[in-house]
Length: 299
Length: 246
Image (cartoon, rainbow over all chains, first blue to last red; front, side, top):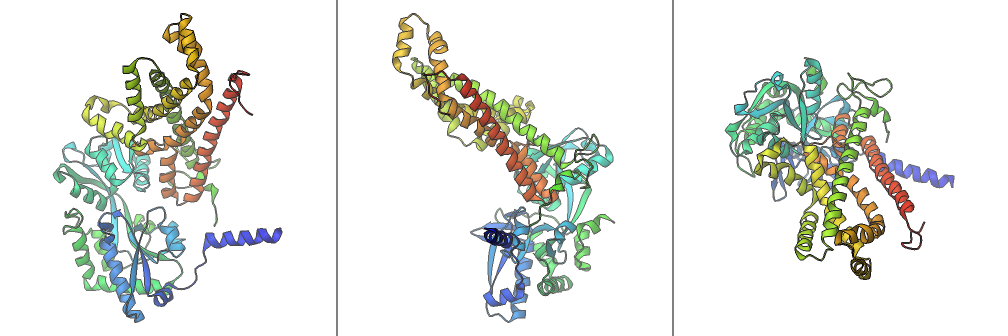
């Protein structure tokens, strides 16, 4: 009886921890395939273009990185499988080996570094707010007594709460179930501001019926380095990815790819997000690093 | 897999551990938030239940009256509200109807979701009430009318006291369902358990602990309703009339 329990326990422990020790490069070499984690709708970073195709700034960067790795390994052919991930399952899927390289919109922070590894930062996100252009709001300090929309399951609202405690401004949080829903709250007047990553705000404004009715204003609530995510403790793979990204940063190739996804019209609606690379993003390209969000906050 | 249950003792803003787990006026812990979310879930469910029972009883009765227009009205009500998914109904009440009637914008989303969930459930309860009334032999209604009861009196003194007892078991299921269905309220920004789970797991990166507790609370709430209504069922039973097996 006791033996059975030990067996069951070790089996469960096996499922739950999935000790996957083989290195990712070996796995890619042996199977001639790799699984890329992508997002359904993470603005210009990673999104579904329809027809089972995925695109975006990070997706294209990953495709180029994987192309470099294919050359490095001397593989005649490398099949890239696309696996959609959500913000809830992306870390477990990378940990258990379902996804080899996640190319979405994951913030590099200390808590996550315990579970996964991040490539050098390729995009720096700034959390700001979108308001209706005629509302006259230009600063967070004007939000006293107003409704502020944000999306359930994102960390933006946490920054806002911190700010609330620090400044004593009292506002009411309204949660949309996804970004489109939060933007609808702003558009219909149920909320006076929508606090979110600026590239998501810019994307939603671009898709609005009349983009001139909205604008992005106010202080930067938080700065978050967004990076490509990989399994922890696989230095060879991380080096291969980092080297490929650093080469693109040096050659200026990365700016061209950024331009393609953030300043040119993109499918499915063929509108441009219209968000030039921020100073912080350019700084990350100039000095490649994988510093977590906490280091940005210290400044 | 390591579970870290102390996550509930963390402050919701800076993530620091708070002594005693429960915060105060200054600090709010995830445990405080969880309890308040549970309160919202129970409030939405309880108020929607009252709306559902009241509307469901009236509509159910209408559908068994001998007046054809009333029957058609009751049938239309039931089919309208039970054939549209509850999440869609919540969105209709929240986004569409206030756009058509700007006056309704002032109504808090809490009341809108209570009405939406209540009316959706009322359609299902009306169906049960109708079935309960129709399961009573037609002879009882006719005999009561022959004795000089008015139609309202027939319902009040003869049909409904029996029908309610007959439909108590399915009504119990429906009352448990309303607790689970109240999770749709997250979509219109009610800070209830589902919204808490989605938000807190993202903030703390401790999804498994949070979902386990939230699942447990839903289970416990539904079980509590089940037990209460079971006692009601036992208390109200009339020996020899409707058999309740223990």
